[in-house]
Length: 75
Image (cartoon, rainbow, N blue to C red; front, side):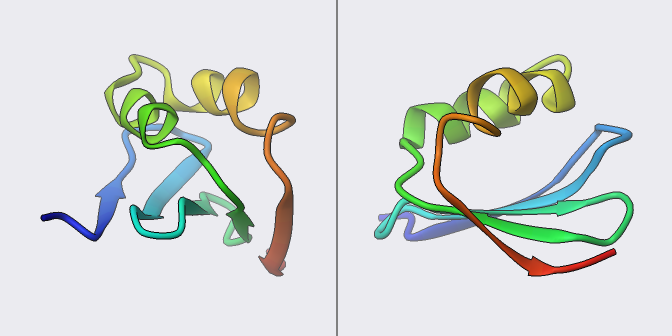
């Protein structure tokens, strides 16, 4: 069973995404260097983010304002 995943992004906005399937925690590293952690993200939303033609657009529309977040590292 897959417990976590790390994906290099094809986006100009997002550099990498880290997802923990156990906790539903999504960490997003942005191209500028900032790192955010999003709580209780559904595995479907993570999967769709990875498959999105525009990951930056999907993130902005489906994750950014939908889930609670913590800024872990400033750019």
